Structures are given as structure tokens and as C-alpha cells.
Picture 1 (cartoon, rainbow, N blue to C red):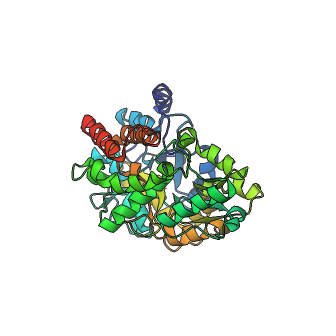
Picture 2 (cartoon, rainbow, N blue to C red):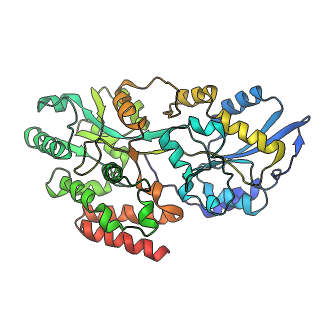
Picture 3 (cartoon, rainbow, N blue to C red):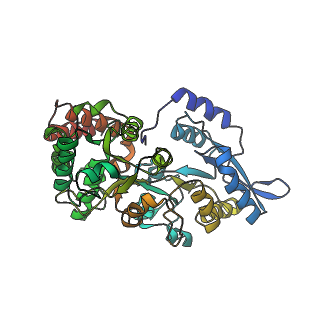
Length: 418
């Protein structure tokens, strides 16, 4: 799953200009036969949004939703910023991590902390939509990856599940390689390694650090200090010849194909690959990531998905309509649409059918909020820091740096951005 988004400034500006003729928000504009018009900017296309909008307008016949979406290859944040600075801000817009959002820092996002519907969000989702104890948006979905394994291959070495600890996992990998000659584990390094993300989540949880990497960005600690333990443990894969250093050039799709072709016994992935895995004919299963030394047990890599927020200057009937939209997106009706589209819902009290392969990760990881993704806590300069981190991970695997140097280089990058 790709976590970094391409930046296409020219396309974004062009798209933003095309959106400018839409009605400006803020006042009590009413049209469409006396209905209140709610303007909305989303990342999802019209086809995805259609069932939500139809259900919402049926529930609230006095509200008309005027929805526009970002082009698939456009810089969504830039398009939204263009609309806001151009006086054409939407009443409601797609919204990600509050801690990393410039519009929150600029007081352009409505504080919805005291709205009753906020309480329906899962704890992880609420934290994702919060900054300094205040809530600025709602989301209903999240993801967490896990270790997918070929049951037949593991059975040949006497294993029927992923071990509890990292030491045991390394031993299992060595046994598969030595006895069967199969690549024991194939990860992808075109983004933050999911194993490192999982280890850091467990590390911060054990420390009681609720800020995660944001404490580094704020100057309270350093990458060099916080990441040494996890990087040293993770690098055992390469230093002990469990995994090839050629993994630097492997994408998530390539890792999946190696698994499907029977060339790799285990990979780390998530629900986005279930369709291909189920069609592969392989007898596969999924388990939680092993526990790293010094960390809370069985943390995984994962994050909450973007949701919706309200422009801070909206008022009157449009503000009422905007709040109704956020509340509706956490309703059972909207959540069922979300679940039917293959998303994993994390809203309290909502039950959905889960692919049986995912049940353990869902019950013991995702629902409990035991997931972490570093770039969700890199602050407003997250794109630049995340790009540097990915590059540094690759250099580390190639043997060009050490865990200590990785931390020093990351700290230097943060300093250069301040």
C-alpha cells in the first residue's frame, strides 16, 4: 500500500482554478428551491460519493450537497488551499491527521470537540483527528497490516502460526531458509517499513508516549535516541542474512507477487491485498506482528483514514448542515455503505463481517488501537520528513549507514526544516 502521495503542483493549481466558480461558503446561502446548499470537497470521486449523498439528502430533504472531488493525480492539499485562499472554501472538506494539518494551525478548521457524535469514534480515530486535546474532524475507518504466511510452507518446518516474539520470528525465518531454500520473508522498502512502524508503536506505548514521533519534531527527544532499539532489531533481517539487501528495490506489489508465486513464505500487507490473495489458490493465513524487545505486545503498522472537517467560518444553516453531514458519516446507514465498499470500520458499536483471514488482526490489533505509523506524527513538514526517512531506510539496508547514523541524519533533516 503506497502511503506517499505524488505532488503535481501544476495540475493542482489548474484544478483549483476550475473549482473557483463554486459558491463561496460562510453565510446562509440557500438555493435549489429553498434548500440549504452544503458545499463539499472530497478526495473520493463522484461514483464513490453518490450513495452517501443520496442517503444524506433523503434523510435531510432540506439540504442539497454540492460536492466536488480532487483529480486522482492532483495535490489534494494544494487544491484545498487554493480554494481557501481564493475565498472559495468548501463548507466541509476531506481532512487528515490534525497534528500535521496546516489549516488547523491557522485556525481554519472548526473545533468540534463538544459535539455528541464525536464520542462514537474509536480511540485511535479520535486521537488522529485531535490536536492539543481538541477534536477537529471525524473518521470512520483505519487499516493495520499483519504478517501473511503460506500455511503449507510453515507446516513443513513445524510451524502453524507467527511466533510471539521477534527472536522467535528470526529463528523461524532461518529455519525456513536453511531447510527449504525458500525466501522466508519479503518486505517492501518503498515506504516506511511496516515492521519498523510496528516496533515504534510498541516502543512508544510501553513508554506511555502518546505523542509518538511528534515529540521528536517538537524538540523533546531525538530520532537518534528513540529509534536505535527498533532499527537494531529490524536490521537483524539483513545482518543475519534472513532477507536479501536487494529488498531495497522491491515494491509492495512485487512482494505480493513473490508470495503468490510461492517464492516467499511470508510478507507483510493488509486488507487491500485480500482479493488477490484469495484468488491465488494459496492456503494462507494472517497473524499479528511479533513483539519486539522492550515494546508493548503485538503492535502493528497502521493508521486511521482521512475523514471530514468543517471550515471554521461556516455559520447559520450551513453550519447546521455541515454538522449533520459529519454526524451522518458516523451513522449505521453511512457506515454500512463504507463497509460494503471493503473498508474496515472502527466506529464504536458498529459490527461488520470481516474476511476470516483478518479476524485476529482486527480483534486484537485494529479494534484496540494497537497500530502506529510514524509519518502520521511528523507534523506539518510530514512529506519532507517522510521522504527523507524512506531514503535513509534504504541506505541502512544497503549497508551505507548505521542505525545511529540513520538517527543523526533524520535529526539533521528536522533541524534543516525548522
